[in-house]
Structures are given as structure tokens and as C-alpha cells.
Amino acid sequence: MKMINVLYVYFLTLFSAVLCERLHDAVYKLKMDEALLTFHSELQYSISVLYTSDYCYKCLYQKLAIVRNGQQNVSVVVRAPFQLTLRILPVDGNSTLCSLSQTFEEAGHYSLWMRQSGLLNDVTCSLTVDKSPHNAYLPLLVAFLILAFAAIFWASLPYIRRCRCTQRLKDLVCCHGSQYSMESEETTNELSVEQNKSKSTRLKSLDTFRGFSLTVMVFVNYGGGGYWFFEHAPWNGLTVADLVMPWFVFMIGTSVVLAFSSMHKKGVPRLQLLRKLSWRTIVLMLIGFCFINYSPRDGLLSWSWLRIPGVLQRLGFTYFVLALMQTFSTHREIPLKVHHWWNPIQDVVLYWPEWLFIALLEIVWLCITFFMPVPNCPTGYLGAGGIGDYGLHSNCTGGAAAYIDRWLLGDKIYWHPSCKVLYRTTQPFDPEGVLGTINSIVMGFFGMQAGKILLFFREMNRSILTRFLAWALILGISAAILSKCTRDEGFIPVNKNLWSLSYVTCMGFMSFVLLGVMYFVMDIKKWWGGKPFIYPGMNSIFVYVGHSLLGTYFPFSWEMRFQDSHWEKLFQNLWGSALWVFIAYLLYRKRFFLKI
Image 1 (cartoon, rainbow, N blue to C red):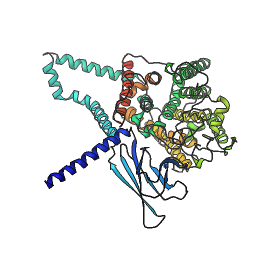
Image 2: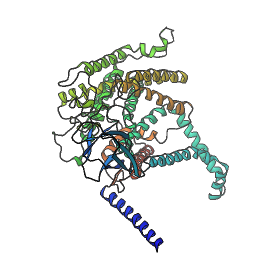
Image 3: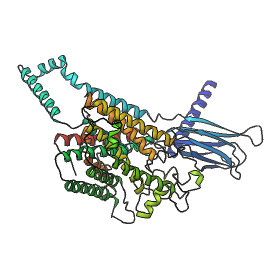
């Protein structure tokens, strides 16, 4: 009988615990990247809990919860991605009782116990885990393994087809006597492919790099599986989402040099080149203004909320300036046959007017950024404002860059910058604003240098790779010096919102490295044909505009049922991105390429 009572009490306690946990989960329905934190206070007075994110630079502490005297516990939902620093202090005082830093992982339940120790004002805080969190990165690992397996299978498919056992299987399945016809057909196809390869002078690395950048851009624009590193950095620093647009700008510069040099050799008049680049610029800007910034689901067009800057607007204007430079540039054949002491840098010396123009542009950016007075803000301010910098410059988001945008465009700029949530900013800031366009042109100019190296040193692969490496080292070292290899403490922090000089040099470094690796793998060694990224790279305008207009519609996205983890979100975003790659492949098969 005693044993039965013990078992009864045990199962009753277990049932009560499970029931309480279920009720707790029902009240606090945690979503992706959220955790539950419960405060248990055994103190004889009310306390206030403040917090700040370690990703938020010099940010003011914000109120998280108040645990009043007599309350058993108070629960709050906290965001999981970044480490939080908590401060416990009396409601009617400013002295810190205790503090701790912790990264709260997805779906975890945590308890913070606050107890009085032996001394009167000595308080101890201890954190316990009531429910183990999920492994938020498991979906990403599974997706990576699946994609890696698919890539390995795709790469090994030609070898599988040539395998003797595969040929025997074909003989068994197919009719007798068809072996010769199959082999002859295969040989004919291979010969035609080789002939096409020999006739084609198009560099696969360029289209593949462009397509890879565009595919990553589609993925991060669709949500990146809900992971913070696939979203834009709140202010300073880099995430995957911050890489793709400068890569695309870099490829614009490379393509401008190759395309306009080809037209120059064909004898296309300069006036016709001007008409072509002007028309393309106008079309790109109109598409960005009329279709990307605005869509029918936004309702009736209203001047009160219309945004003037945008991604395609910046790409269009950057293309316009770079194409103008290439149109009016004196065409010189490099390498020179006559030896000079400056031969190692001849592609720079012979084009000194372009370098002088870019240097003047960068001087303008530096002078405006660091010396232009901004009302009620410190001169040269590069911070996010809001609660950053201890709240001293709350209305100074973006400094001179934002001031120029408001002065020229009023409120017709972006009201939801990436710093809005973390830094609690109240001012609009446009990451595609006027001042940042200067450094966008500089980024495209680095791409023009890559294009000149590919053009003038063709069939001299060692020289091409050496110069790519030299440029990568120069730009990488410059970025390291400007940023001091830190996120927030550099002379000029790496910042995608501002398109800072350190950001542009860092992205130039990565672009030269990636393009050099792809050129070596695809155009020199021919180990990889660029599939599947080469397909969206050859139809970039169609894919970019299409994914922007149709991204919220089925089958590219749908209403998610499971919002408590990354599984469905990651699958949805990968599915949407893969669909656009498949559409680009179908267009490639049909030889349809949208050109402006």
C-alpha cells in the first residue's frame, strides 16, 4: 500500500509538471529565434531588469521586466540570435545588484534566480535551463549536406554515363544493333559541343559569378531561412546579405569594359554608344521605380509614401557613369611592347584620367562624410543614432549621408532601415541613397580594372591571376587598416548602409579573389562549367525583376504553418530560389535572354 501511494504521488507530480509545461507553452507560443526567460525573485523588494544586445554598439539599456515584491515569477520572451547582457537593479535605485551575459538559444526555457546572500546588499543571480533549446542550425546543416550530395552527384554524372556497366545497361534496355547509332550520336554531340566551345569566346567565370551573386541575392531577399547572418547587418559589420550587391556592381564594371571594347572594335560610333547606355540607364531606373519600389499589392500609388531611391536605380546610375567613362576613354592596347619602368602598373598609368576622376569622387565622399556640418549632430558622425552611442545622437542616423538624402528627396526615402529594430531609430535612412552612390561607382571601377586585366592580358593566364592577387592584397590590406580589423572601432567601419570606403575595399578584395578562383577553375582548368549558376547569370535582369515581383505569390512562397523553427522557412526560401534557377535554365534552353 505504501508503494502504491509513492507511485501515485510520483505520477501525479509528473503529470502536474507536464501539464504546467503544456500550459506554459500554450501561453507563450515561441516562434523562430525566440526563447522564454522566467525571473524568480526571493528578494524583499521590487526589482527592474534591463538588457542590451552585445551587437548594439554603446547602446542604452532597455527595460525588459519588473518583478514586484510578492510576485513569484515573471516570464518574458527574448530574441535568441545575439548575446544579451542583463542588469538587475532595484526599482527605486540605480545600483546594480547583479549582471550577466548569455546567449538564449531558440525554443529554450530559462530561469533566472535572484537570492539574497549573507550580506545585506549582496545578491546572487544564477541562470538555469528548464527546457533544452533546439539546435537552430540543424536545418542549415541538413540543407548543406543535401545540396552537397546533389552537387557531387551532378559532377559525377558524366563519369557514370561513360562507365562500362552503364553502357551494358543501355544495351539491355535498348534494341539490339542500336549501340553503334548511340555511340555515333554521342560522338557527334561531343564534337558539336567541342566546336561550340571553340567558337565561343565568352568567359564562363563572369556569367557564373554574376549568377552566383544573383542566386544568393534571391535567397536572402526571400528571407534566408530566417537566419540573422542571411539578413543585412543592423549597422556596422558584414553578413552574407551584405556581400551580394557589391559583387553585382563589380561584375557590372567588368562587363562594361568587355562589352564596350567589343563594340569599339566593331566600329560602333560613339553617338550610338551614348544612345545605348542612356536608354539602358533610363529603363533600369524606371523598372526600379515603377515595379520594384511599388507593386499593385501596395494599393493606390501615393506620393506620401513613395520611395525614390532603390537598388535598380543605383545600379542604373552606376552603370551610366562607368559606361560613360569607358565610352570616352582612349583605347590603348596593353601589354606594351616597349619596356618602361612602370610596365608592371601600365594598366593604371595609361588610364590615369579615369583614376584621377575616381580619386576626385572619393575625395568628395570623404569631405562630405567627415567635414560637412549636420544640424544637431557631431561632424563626421557615422553611427546608427537611436539608442546607440548612449543615446547622445538619437536623431543622427547615418550622419551626412542621411542629411543629404532628406535635403534632396525629403521623406521619399526608406523608413525601415536595418538598424531600426536593434537601435530603435526613428529617422528614415536609405541604404541606396545619394552619397553612397559615389562609392558604388568606385566599386564598379574596381570591376573595370578586372575587365581590363582579362581583356588586355588574354591568353596570359599567369599574368591575369597574378594581377588579380595583387589587387586583392592591396584592397584587403586597405580594408584591414581602415577598419582596424574590428566591427565598430575602426577609422572607417565596414558598413553596407553607408557604403563606407572600408566596405568597398573589403568587397573589392573578395570580388577579385572569387573571380580569380572561378576564372582558374572554369576558364583555365575547365573543371566546372558553372552550372547551375551560369543560367541566372545570363538572364540576370529577368530573374531579379521576376523574383521581386512574384516573391510573395505561390509557388515561390506560401503561408507557413510551422513558425517555431527554421525548417519550413529555410525549405521555402531554398525552394523559391531553386525555382528561379530552374526558370533561368528553361529560358536558356529556349535561347531567351532579356536584354535592355
